[in-house]
Length: 223
Image (cartoon, rainbow, N blue to C red; front, side):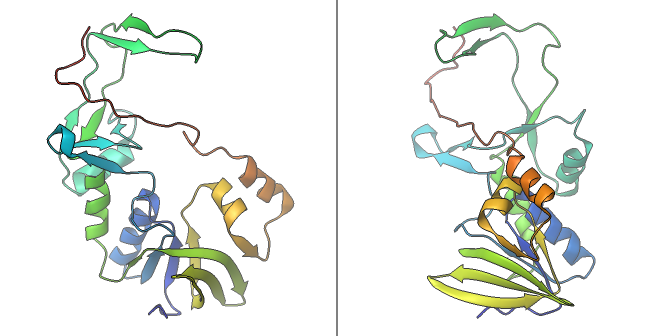
């Protein structure tokens, strides 16, 4: 049984949004917990450390940010005192625009790409820094939320943990998940209006259909 107070706020999803929300709540003295179905936190902000490349860090999800157009993430980086470095965008790039078309080399003009920055050690440094702002016990992994049931002044959450089902009561729930995941994986009572539920189902997850592959070269690939 979880030690979750009925005055707490339950945040579903331990990605960057969920972690940041929990950090802001605790900073205001509002108790909360973060539940995630996976065994690790960070959501799609994942970093692979390769022993084959001298423990270099490779981001499997979000990789860089643009300080000129993303002031909020830039402010968060400064607040957490994270180290970053400039994304290399000079010379040329090989691009495969379509599956049946061979990759082509494109020369990059000056100013062709907006200045971007990456996290030293990978985006996992952002996840770790956010996690470190939370009191012990806030993050609870391998706890899959199945339903959220609002009952007058309280909310009942049904979850699966370790093969068993568990019910807990809390003050309110924040769903820090893609809308499509909410619509397909969590039963809400009372149910959402049909138009809103349909909108959740149709809302694409940003880059949800993309995949990354890691290629390691002994020297910079400049040809």
